[in-house]
Length: 115
Image (cartoon, rainbow, N blue to C red; front, side, top):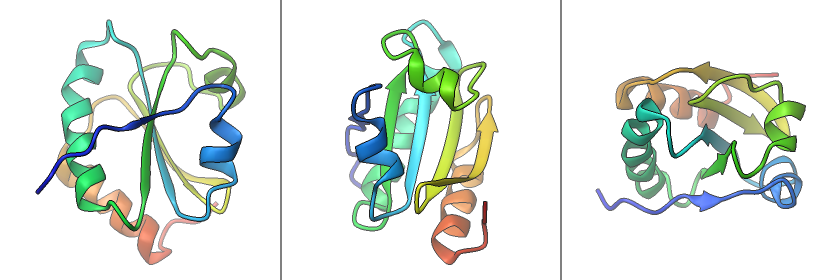
């Protein structure tokens, strides 16, 4: 499976790239100093390759972009949010396994998660 670098989303681009997206979106809130975030990043990049045409997977650095995490109620990193049609349908805080993330994304695609 080919990994893809995650698109970096900022406070300025969050609405366009996440809330107004025409595909489901997975957002990784992370920070460079966060060890669990650094462990999660390659898993998310692998999943970005796997789901390339079906789901947009992005990351937002909570040290560089502070307004969006605050507005979204994100209080710790890593946090993963799943969105469909601009609405949050699931959220996980803390490190997750590839299996847990895959199950969540599959549920997002199947419409099993709802706001």
